[in-house]
Image 1 (cartoon, rainbow, N blue to C red):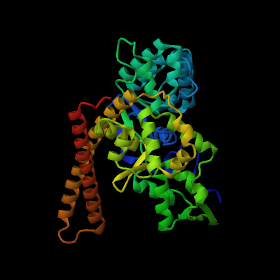
Image 2 (image 1 turned 90 degrees about the vertical axis):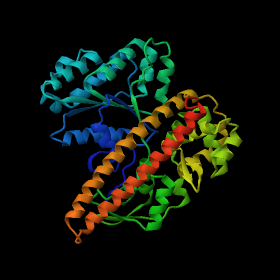
Image 3 (image 1 turned 180 degrees about the vertical axis):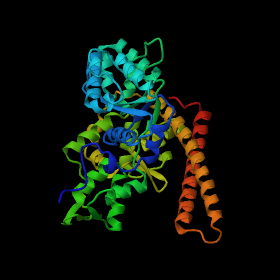
Image 4 (image 1 turned 135 degrees about the horizontal axis):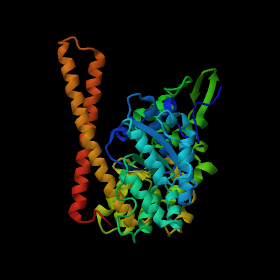
Amino acid sequence: MRNPFIVGRWLRGPDHYGRHKLLDHLLNTKDSAIWLVGTRRMGKTSVLRQLEWLADQDPDSSLVPLFWNIEACESASDLAYELFISVEDETERFEALGVDIPALEEMDVRRILRSIQRTLSSQGKQLLLLIDEGEALINVARHDNRALARLRRSLQQGEHRTILTATKQLMQLNEMMRDWLTSPFLFGFNLVNLWSLDVEAAQALIHQEQNEIEVTVDDSVLEDIMVFTHRHPYLIQFLCHRLFVADKPGVGRLRPVESKDLQADHLLAGFLQVDYDHLSPTERQILLAVTRHGVVDEETLQSDLDIASASVLENFIYGMHKLGYLRQIHGGWAVGNEFLRRWVIDNQNNLARQIHSKVSDENVAALLTEGRRFELQYLQKEILLLQQQMEDLVVQRNTYGEQVPGSLLQQLKETRQALEVAREQMQQLDAENAEISASGEGVY
């Protein structure tokens, strides 16, 4: 029997777990350009592929998805070629809508996008451009600065919608484009952080609830997996793949976690190194200090690192928490997951000597300000939606008198709890934003 846990490739459809609220937001937002930022193997490609799948599955959707991987691109001509190939790979989808695919072959990126969108607009459709491996734009900028400026106008001012995935490394574009007369490349992209799975989705993934193979897991093993991976989707798959034992056809279980299971292999170690490379100098200091302490409060960290302002430290910790580098334990902070913690310990001396970073503290601070702004907007929309759901459920409950179905009562309970959590998150974010604004240090 095959191992049901998939390691090393993107997932969509029944293989994709969680992120339902995020996916719904990305499909329905009016924002024309979004940057989905996350660490390596956090599931950025899978989110794009799931968006593509969902748009294709909905016959009433006005969105026509196009997945465009630009990983190998170094010039404007490379971008145009890969874009054409991406359209050609989906010939059936675009020919059915009247797109003349052969005519696109000699066009540049702007003309290809304009031609496709004009054809789609005539049918009341809109192109959903899903750009993966956005870090390649850094190489394009080095070779052709003007081409990148034209691309920016096309992505942000066109009639189509763009969702771009990349790590924090993409912030280098703003450094490289300081001499632009207009705004830097990333200004105009609304930022969305991609963080770990929620509890329910992580548990569903561990149990493989969407798979035909039945996986049994003891409660203690389930809890260990949740803690050691901190609900990181790749790490869940990675660890569960090691733990899976096939008992009989179609049925398997997860054995208890052993120390050796928590050591990164060569491939995972490479991903962890890339994640470390994407930290700014201050973020690296924070990660190394937290590793030394095990669990540490912010006051101790501030003293150890000689950071003058508590609000500056809190801002960096906020970002590292959102991207999975750190997690909260017993009122303090610890390394985000056990694989990262052990890897940092094993490589601490070498990591401490890596002083230079391509990601500056200033850029990270600006990124965090934008991330907080989006999260606040997201929570506001979520609270309004949950309030409406509560009102609808209460109306339904009142129609039953004293004989209310148990399923409806459970829905009411879950919605009320979700609303309370969202309100608490918003209150906390409001308080943190107010503290940072009062200190005048929202931007480093």
